[in-house]
Amino acid sequence: MRAAVIDEHGEPLEIEDVAYPEPQPDQVIVETEACGVCRSDWHAWQGDWSWIGAGVPEGQILGHEPAGIVSAVGDDVETLEEGDRVAVPFHLGDGSCPHCQEGRANNCETVIPLGLSEYSQGAFAEAFPVREADFNCVKLPDSVDFTEMAGLGCRFMTAYHALADRANLRPGDWVAVHGCGGVGLSAIHIADAIGAHPIAIDLVDDKLERARELGARETVNVTEVDSAAREVQAITGNGADVSIDALGVADTCQNSVNSLGTRGTHVQVGLTTGEEAGQIDLPVDVMTMQELDFHGSFGMPLVRYEELFNLIAQGTLEPSKIIGERLTLEELPETLASMDDYETVGIPVVTEF
Image 1 (tube, rainbow, N blue to C red):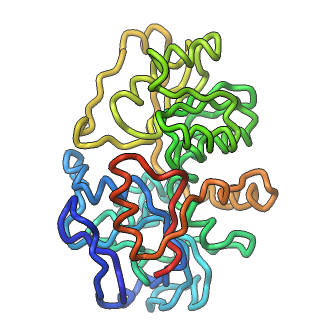
Image 2 (cartoon, one colour):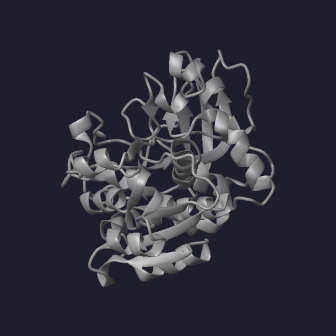
């Protein structure tokens, strides 16, 4: 089968013929119908995250936002069969640790990130394996198509968990979204659906225009103001109730925290680049005196999928609005490389393998 493989970090992915996977007893094989292209793929391709022991080796097949059809079933799998339409979260849990048992599979003690670990080849391929398939595969309702699910797969569900669960965003809250890539635009749309007042902050006018289309009440181009944080303070009067760093560089994280009003909540979604290597200076005295909350947010618990599907069926959420380009597998290497300059708008999705 064909797959996009990292032959060398930072060099274009190679489209190669590789062996079709065989399922282990606990696994299913999923034939990929669609897979989103995420900045986390870019990080892995660049060779980032060695500072947290999560670097991706050369020879890896990336791709962690998939939807597809079960093509083969391991001997121990009980709830799935060939032909099932499924979504697969990027954080593959073991199903047995305390976090998994309590409904927080995104915090699994032995989590294996799909496509971002040598133990789990990804979905930029015609097919891919899924560990503990009974636990990790989510049957896809007919109301959600494969491309839409690929848009949900990492960034949309991550934004939903960040705002609805970690920040407890409420109607009427001001929420500043720093960075309007896929997860940032998802956050704008979700915040608008909740009834909050989103502010989009970026340096690319096309992304800010898309944010307005998705419900941003205000936009801030950081190249046109002296301070993004002060601009948010001026718009809201007292500072944002919630602010999210959807990119993961020092400036966006610091601007996010400094955008907050007293007792506000910052949510960190973006992972850092090699420049920060996981370390960012923060105004801890201000955070202490204003009682600011700082939350990390990783993926979304599996138990929340049904709620998301219901909101989509009702028309409250429309992840299809965030989808950007539809790509062939051959177009993937160029699209991934374009993320060097933050050129992609919305969520690119590979739909032809």
